[in-house]
Structures are given as structure tokens and as C-alpha cells.
Amino acid sequence: MKKRVLYIISIVIILIGIISYFTLHRKESSYTNEYIEITPIATHINGMDFIDSATCIECHAQIVKDHYKTAHFNSFQPANKQTIKGSFEKDKNTLNLGDKVTFNFTEKDSGFYQEPIFNNQNTPFYSAKMDIVVGSGTKGQSYLMWNNNNLLQLQASYFTPTNSWINSPGAPDQLAPARPVLERCLECHTTYAQNISGSKNGSKFHKKNLVYGIDCQRCHGPVKKHVVHHKQNPNDKIAKHIIKYSSLSRQQRLDACALCHSGLRTETTERAFSFAIGDTLKKFSSPDYDESSLEDLDVHGNQYGLLKASKCFTNSNSLNCITCHNPHKKERGNISSFNQKCMDCHTTISKPINCSGDKEEIKKTRNNCIQCHMPLVKSKTMKIQIPDGDEVSVDVRTHLIGIYK
Ligand code: HEC
Ligand code: HEC
Ligand code: HEC
Ligand code: HEC
Ligand code: HEC
Ligand code: HEC
Ligand code: HEC
Image (cartoon, rainbow, N blue to C red; front, side, top):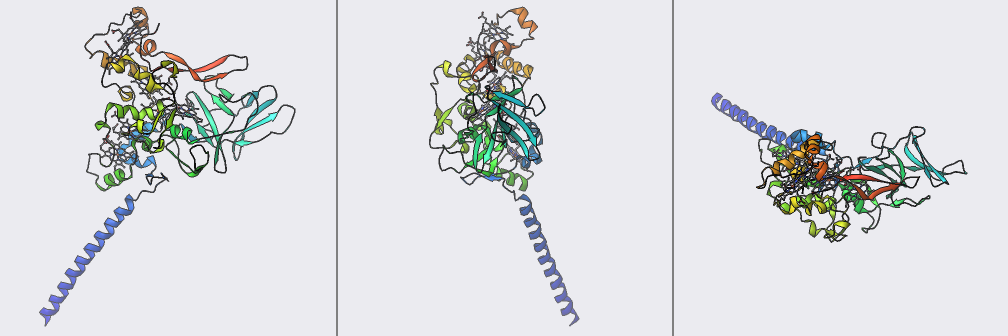
């Protein structure tokens, strides 16, 4: 009898053990599942979820830290004291538009405003809140406002070469209505925006389904599965569920940048917001200009067209944007690193450099190859008229590498 009781008790204990093992184990794995559930910050109309790029810090800390400082990441931001480069200080916070109107730029508790006043009146004609800043401020900035879901570009912009408020390039010399912002503008300056106008040429966007700045997912495409996999398999050091850059052809590599750096383009049926590294740009859009005429290519915004026409490009089979640029880093001004890229290749190609430029000058400029072979050239498109009639343009490094006098 006692033996049977002991026998039953031990069976019960074993059973409890087994059940609690499985229950606990199940709890643990469901806990992990909860842990890796990643909340999307926006969703592409094709169903792809966008997640916060802070999610990548856990495994790619340095890249994320560096990327936050780039012009790409800062190219489209909510407007605030830090992001607006134009001044709100007395004496710097006005802009004369012809001799009839003065723009005042004012800071209020509710935000930052553009307020044009007719010179014979006391109250502003309108007061428009700057909601979004376009442009990191390297060359200039443009300001957008929401009118319900309509996105509009305000008349006054900021121009870095003159460090002042300006009338937007292309705007008339008098008070003009705010311009509707089309999807095309956002495609190049931000990661994602959902057009709810029902047409490519509408300016209505979803205010919340919006990913500011050019972040990881604009270039690398869908990442959610990649993050979930690597969180679940922390020992897997081989990248999974992500497009492999190393496997791409030269044209695919170029296209990853040409999407936004080859001037204005007309879309085919595929939408630019669906493009990711590895895609073929030809399927998405074609240039709005004659590619064979160098005259039509501006130094601003068409690095692809100019580079492609350079001998460095046509006579080598590898040169692409990444040969010289690290897409994650703010590299502006790091001239010695760029010069090294010229040398990396020019000392390995069969013919030695016979740079018969002025030897003294070369020495003085510490072998600054770029100064002579990629000089600063005035942009034909990014320029303004200043009050005394002169034209001021931004200077841009030409990507037509060559011999200049
Ligand atoms: C839990 C860890 C983890 C997280 C979180 C993570 N990754 Fe990764 N990722 C990896 C590992 C491991 C690799 C392979 C080793 C490497 O290249 O660093 C990798 C590689 C990559 C690569 C290189 C692919 C190639 O060309 O070989 C890209 C791009 C990438 N990750 C993007 C992202 C982005 C964007 C995010 C954030 C949305 C992210 N990862 C979040 C673990 C992670
Ligand atoms: C989604 C569009 C888009 C893609 C894709 C893109 N860029 Fe850009 N890039 C921009 C815009 C917009 C700016 C201007 C940002 C600003 O200053 O506001 C810019 C600026 C730059 C700059 C100047 C940075 C500075 O410090 O002023 C470099 C260099 C650059 N891009 C290189 C690249 C390379 C290389 C690639 C491909 C790997 C690439 N871009 C892909 C849109 C893009
Ligand atoms: C085809 C892609 C494309 C479109 C469309 C586009 N941009 Fe840009 N934009 C760029 C690139 C690329 C740069 C940086 C180019 C360079 O420095 O050569 C740039 C630079 C700028 C800058 C200067 C940023 C800085 O700080 O240097 C501003 C401001 C700007 N764009 C505003 C706009 C606005 C506003 C629109 C829409 C109305 C627009 N852009 C449409 C690609 C585009
Ligand atoms: C402008 C496009 C662009 C953006 C934005 C971008 N990347 Fe990349 N990324 C690239 C390209 C191009 C490569 C390939 C570089 C190479 O092979 O030299 C790359 C390579 C990588 C790699 C693998 C090689 C390496 O450098 O370790 C990782 C990881 C990565 N990116 C993560 C990220 C993360 C995380 C972000 C956002 C914080 C991000 N990328 C934003 C274009 C981009
Ligand atoms: C991937 C290799 C590569 C890189 C990187 C490179 N080049 Fe070249 N470059 C070439 C080749 C190949 C030629 C053609 C040489 C020939 O035909 O003898 C060339 C030609 C030239 C020429 C002569 C152009 C002409 O029109 O006659 C100049 C000048 C030049 N490169 C300067 C530079 C400078 C400056 C840099 C850095 C900003 C640079 N290159 C980066 C490969 C490269
Ligand atoms: C041979 C080297 C080289 C290659 C290849 C190259 N770049 Fe550049 N890029 C430079 C240098 C040098 C600068 C000037 C950097 C500075 O002023 O600090 C520059 C500047 C830029 C700028 C800012 C222009 C300005 O003056 O404000 C953009 C945008 C840019 N590159 C995009 C690209 C894109 C897109 C590609 C590929 C189509 C590309 N680059 C290929 C060397 C290169
Ligand atoms: C002071 C201006 C200046 C500087 C700095 C300079 N070059 Fe040159 N380079 C020239 C001129 C001018 C020529 C044209 C010579 C001729 O055709 O007589 C030239 C020609 C060249 C050529 C074509 C000739 C050939 O060997 O095929 C290459 C390649 C070249 N330079 C590369 C470079 C590199 C790389 C650097 C940086 C280490 C550099 N240059 C720095 C002015 C300069």
C-alpha cells in the first residue's frame, strides 16, 4: 500500500516537473517573441513596415551615430529652433520683397512663422507656420507648412552663401501664394511619405505615415525581418534577410545613388518610394533631359551624369560613388581622404601619373588633386538675384573629373 502511494506521489512530482518545465519554457519563448515584436513607425502602401532607425543601434551603433550627422538624415525635419537656419534675431529677421512687402520671421510659443506685411499696413497679410524644413542647410533650406493635409512650400527660404532669408528661387518679386509640394520633391528628400491625393500631381499627404530624413531604409529597403532574425539568433554573424551590396553590379551600385543624384526624372509605372539598393533605375524613371549633352547637366544634383562622362569612369570598370564616398558618414571638408581615393587608383593603374600641372602650385596645395581636377563650379539652377541686381549661386564640386585651365 505505502509503496503504491509513494509510487503515485513520485509520478505526480515528475508530472508536475514536466508540466512546469514546458509552461516555463513556453513563457520564456513567448516572452522573447514579445521582446522582438517591433512597432512600425509607418507603413508603405505596398505593406512594408518602416521601423525607427534607433532599432539598428543595438548591432550597428557606430553607423547609426555617424548617420544621424549626415546631410541625408537631416534633409527633411520637423521645424524647430535647431533645424531652422534662418535667424529670428532683431535686424536679421526680415526680408524686403520689392518695395511693397516686408516679410517678418517670428518666434512664438506655438512655433515659427513667416508673416508678410504690406509696407503701408500694420498687420500681417497672413501668418504661416513653418512645419517642415527641407535641406540640411549646407547650401540652403526651404520651409513647408501643412494646411490640413495639403503640403505647401512657403515663399521665403534661407540661402547659406548669403546667410540670410531670401525669396525662394523661381518665385516672383511680389507676394505669391504658397506652392503645392508634389510627391517628387519628397521622394528625393525623405524616406517615405504617403500621397493621399489620388494622383502623382496632388499635394495631399498622410501627416502621420511619414518617415523624416533619408534613413537606413531609404537605401537598404525592408529591414524588419532582418532585425527579428538577428535578435532571435544573436550568434548568427552573417547578414540575413537584407539585400547584399557586395553582390551588386556596378550599374546597380550607381543606380542606388542616381535615384536622387541624376537630376530631374519622369517616373514610369514603378514609384520612387519603392526603390531600394539592388533595383534597376531604368525600370522606375527616365531622365527629363538629354543625357548625352553635358551642357544640360548641372553640377547641383547631377553627380551621376557628370561622373559618367569622366575618363576615370569610362576607362575603369569599377569606379562608382562608393569608391570615394562613405554613405554613412559626414565627410564634407575631409579633402585629404578624398585625395587619397584618387591616389589609391592612380598609383595602381598601369600608366604612372604624369601630372604636369604647375609643380610649385601642386606642392603648395599639398597634392590637392580635387582643387584642380574637380573644381568648384557655380550651379546654373541653385542661384538667386540679390537686391542690387547681382546673381549669387552656390558653388558645387563638379563630378566631371578632368583637366581644367
Ligand atoms: C540584433 C542585431 C541586428 C540588428 C538590430 C540589426 N542588424 Fe543589420 N546586421 C546584423 C548582423 C549580425 C549583420 C552581419 C554582420 C555585419 O555586416 O555587420 C548585419 C548586416 C547588415 C547589413 C549589411 C548587409 C550586407 O551588405 O552584407 C545591413 C545593410 C544591415 N545589417 C542593416 C541593418 C539596419 C538598417 C538595421 C536597423 C533597421 C539593422 N541592420 C539592425 C545584425 C543586426
Ligand atoms: C533618396 C534620395 C537620395 C539617395 C538614394 C541618395 N542621396 Fe545623396 N543626397 C540626397 C539629398 C536630398 C542630398 C542633400 C541633402 C541636404 O543637404 O539636405 C544629398 C546629399 C549627398 C551628399 C552631400 C553630403 C553633404 O555633406 O553635403 C553626398 C556626398 C551624397 N548625397 C552622396 C550619396 C551617395 C554616395 C548615395 C548612394 C549610396 C546617395 N547620396 C544616395 C538624396 C539622396
Ligand atoms: C531628383 C531628386 C530631387 C528632387 C525632385 C528635389 N531635390 Fe532638392 N536636392 C536633391 C539633391 C541630390 C540635393 C543635393 C545636391 C547637391 O548638393 O548637388 C538637393 C538639395 C536641395 C536643397 C539644399 C540643401 C542643402 O542644405 O544643401 C534644398 C533646400 C532642396 N534640395 C529643396 C528641394 C525642394 C523644396 C524640392 C521640391 C519642391 C526638391 N528639393 C526637389 C535632390 C532633389
Ligand atoms: C544613402 C544610402 C544609405 C543610407 C542612408 C544607409 N546606408 Fe548602409 N550602406 C549603403 C551602401 C551603399 C553600403 C555599401 C557600402 C560599401 O560596401 O562600402 C552600405 C553598407 C551598410 C552595411 C554593411 C557594411 C558596413 O559598413 O558595415 C551596414 C551594416 C549598413 N549599411 C547599415 C546601415 C544603417 C544601420 C543605416 C542607417 C543608420 C544605413 N546603413 C544607412 C547605403 C546606405
Ligand atoms: C577607379 C580608379 C580611379 C579613381 C578612383 C580616379 N581615377 Fe582618374 N582616371 C582613371 C582612369 C582609368 C583614367 C584614364 C587614364 C588613361 O586613359 O590613361 C583617369 C583619368 C584621369 C584624368 C585625366 C582626365 C582627362 O580628361 O584626360 C585626371 C585629371 C584624373 N583621372 C584625376 C583624378 C582625380 C583628381 C581623382 C580623385 C578625385 C581620380 N582621378 C580618381 C581612374 C581613376
Ligand atoms: C573620384 C571620387 C568621387 C566619386 C567617384 C564621387 N564623388 Fe562625390 N564628391 C567627391 C569629392 C572630392 C567631393 C567634395 C567633397 C567636399 O567638398 O568636402 C564630392 C562631393 C559630392 C557631393 C556634394 C557636392 C557639393 O559640392 O556640395 C555630392 C552630392 C556627391 N559628391 C555625390 C556623389 C554621387 C552621387 C556620386 C556617384 C554618382 C559621387 N559623388 C561620386 C568625390 C567623388
Ligand atoms: C595645381 C593643379 C593640379 C593639382 C593640385 C593636381 N593636378 Fe593633375 N594635372 C594638372 C594639369 C594642369 C594637368 C594637365 C597637364 C597637361 O595636359 O599638360 C594635369 C594632369 C593630370 C592627369 C592626366 C595626365 C596623365 O598622367 O594621364 C592625371 C591622371 C592627374 N593630373 C592626376 C592628378 C592627381 C591624382 C592629383 C593629386 C595627387 C593631381 N593630379 C593634382 C593640374 C593639377
